[in-house]
Length: 41
Image (cartoon, rainbow, N blue to C red; front, side, top):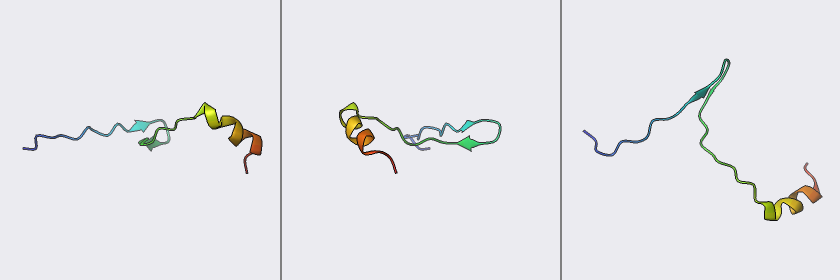
């Protein structure tokens, strides 16, 4: 028996999709103006 168990994956689902989010996005206010002033392509 393995003593170290990995946490179970928490799949999210809705009517037409099942997904597993592995990333967390952090928006840094210090650089927000630089990014928004130059525009988005």
